Length: 445
Image 1 (cartoon, rainbow, N blue to C red):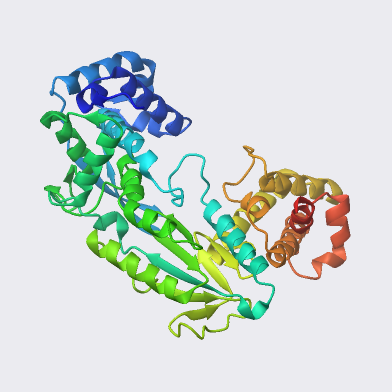
Image 2 (tube, rainbow, N blue to C red; image 1 turned 45 degrees about the horizontal axis):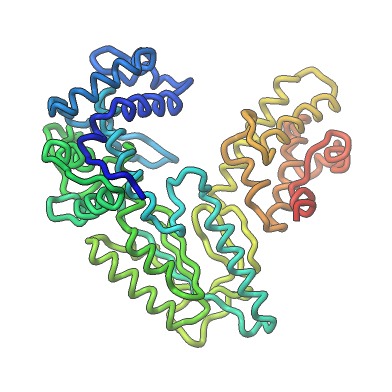
């Protein structure tokens, strides 16, 4: 049984603020944010040295109702070629809103569906694709006759989820937050403490065009509370679709997927999605909404004419085939291969002047370390996906060939097909030691 508490006691606990300072320390270690995140010329690095004293001061100010959040700064940043609008705070506001966010997250997490995969510690974004692939393989195994196989798959994406979650006084988000706190045994929300929760979810902002504003839609992207609300606001939908017998459901933030072998059940699930989204005053992005029928040949359905035939399903950076294999989608694969190419070229430049065999072994060693399935500081963030996630043998064979050509290009300067006349493929594998992803996957299987 959970011990009863109240919001005031939680927000008055110095240990919560000290833990938040420690979290910021771990997050920004070895980055310039350690010195750029400031409050009145006092940096995060300085606060970390006096975390205990700072935590007590902040807890005391909040407990007395003396702490006031400053308006957040709205900024534009570029991520993957797209401009994103984020909210930034000063140092102490970052700590205090982080404490409130952690408190709400702790209350909401036990209520979340196990079919939600976004922003959850220890849960990889690859997990839903792997589980969907397992579901597809089980479907195939249960139906020996290929003519009886076929899955109806619903793909939905919430339109501008970040900027469309209602936060006006009549939004359901406030009732949801109160109920989550109560379920966690945190009651007695005094007005001054609830005001801090409200300001964390719906802060006053310095807008880009000038002036202050309090939005009625949208959560403060870039702050911890945004991910907490991304997960929890659609919690009712998660539980409704996860409970459908014989189906598969997964959600990653605003990305929704449901699969079932029965057409009528899938149509009912589509209506359930629409009803929940409408009730929450959100919208489905129509250009990305798709009703699909998954078979190896991509044939159309005879039971649901609107379900488009397909042989693979795109979901969270991957493509899951009707055979139950997982491949990286084109965008993710290109990003991984470009980084591997850059590493190979840098490695070759570092051993410039060495004989060909020495240079080849050095380049292959760097590529192998980047592809290692075990965590390593030498890895590119996504390169290990090729070892850990991809089960599509044809994609692995293509990547093997591309990597071998990349190595030859880095060593000899010749990136054409005829480069293998100068350095045989067998030399790259056996002499220089370049790993084969396809063979590694076969051994793992």
